[in-house]
Length: 155
Image 1 (cartoon, rainbow, N blue to C red):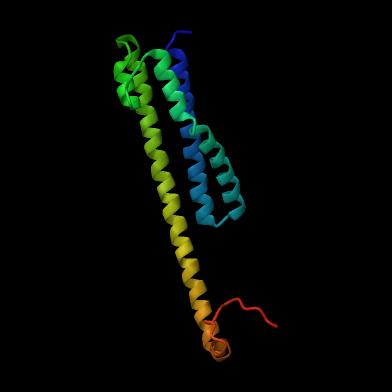
Image 2: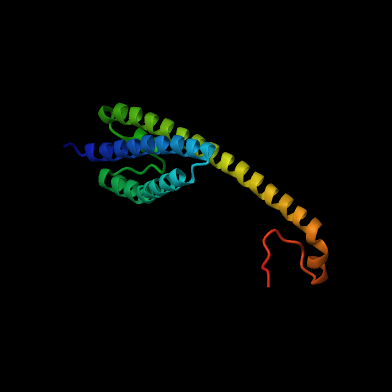
């Protein structure tokens, strides 16, 4: 195995992890749309594994830079420093990796936006129920200085 092969293999595994994560994010989007909380919980646990694996990227990149005597700060800069005979295969992999990262970011943003919308609707509904509760029982709640609440403790 050549001295650049381990680095290539590492980046290929990183790309495959992002492809897997994209699939998870599509499933997450479906789970959010279907309000399948159990499935959503499973997916989030799988995502956490990916996050743990990804945290080592900077240290791994630094290690490969040292081993290969490269100085670029970004992966695109590093690719341009590689010998000409290695540059094209790394450039192709870099482009695939870049596309999978962009897809991952877009899917993650869609999921987050949808979750934010659902949470906003839930909060709005709770506030509406809280107001309705206060309208019916407001005098008792207001007499002790508390604002009306949806969930109150009976004594």
